[in-house]
Length: 200
Image (cartoon, rainbow, N blue to C red):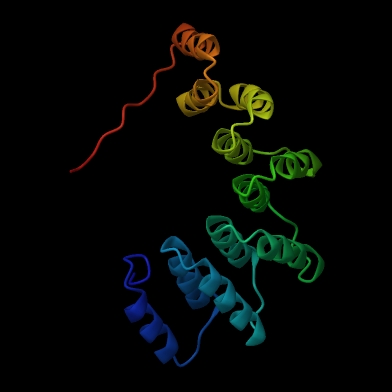
């Protein structure tokens, strides 16, 4: 609770006072550190957990991969993804792959992210493709963005967010005709963008 609320000082104090720390308490701290921009500390805490002899499960690896992605720690994320498979014999789930796609995509390694999706032993879900489309927008990769958006339109034909992302990729490149075509396609399919709102 304290970690999620941003009171990392209090969370750390409670964590260190625990007579015995388990996977759940470690993951709670790692997630809290990750959420509040302390990626390096999150990775350090994961390493400490391993040094204490605790065996990470698939959830723990999801938590550390997300932490690495948020902090842009590509090498660390790749290391733990390999450890999960080879050292702990955990078969990566679609969620683990989506975390890795997000990690590689955010860092600009779009081709590597795309190759990882294509190498998945199971059919990639929309989250993995969505992470890659977001990275295409971030790094203005129109060619790959079109390809990924096409796949997402098949998987989630009514998800307005995918159309908006592709439209934004075109807009950033001043391709206004393509922006209009995407908007027309949305209108034709009866898809509406959900307007943003604020509690303030």
